[in-house]
Length: 134
Image (cartoon, rainbow, N blue to C red; front, side, top):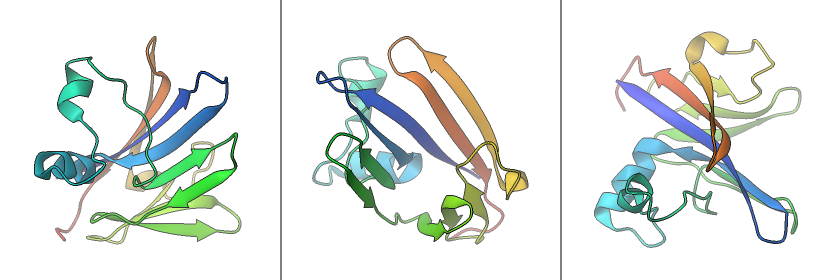
């Protein structure tokens, strides 16, 4: 089974950015259950709406207001490491994913792919192959 975390940034009209990490499966499940403040993935795939990080995702940074939110999902726990920064630990197999792509730490636990899109800019996908179900 594959578990994916998506990192993206969104530039606001004011010129400031918001950014965040999204647990893709968790977000899809919330969308299908119509949980409050869910991401409208159908609208994203149909290109009717723009995918933006939300406060209820794994992490959310509002660079203008200085707001930072961290949320555990059904699949991942947010771990803070003094030396390596933000790390996500999969709750099923307890493998850790370091989001700093310049570090070799836990690099064998996921495949990191960066894509460029005219609409979204650089988007990073962290694909983790689950070794044990939750």
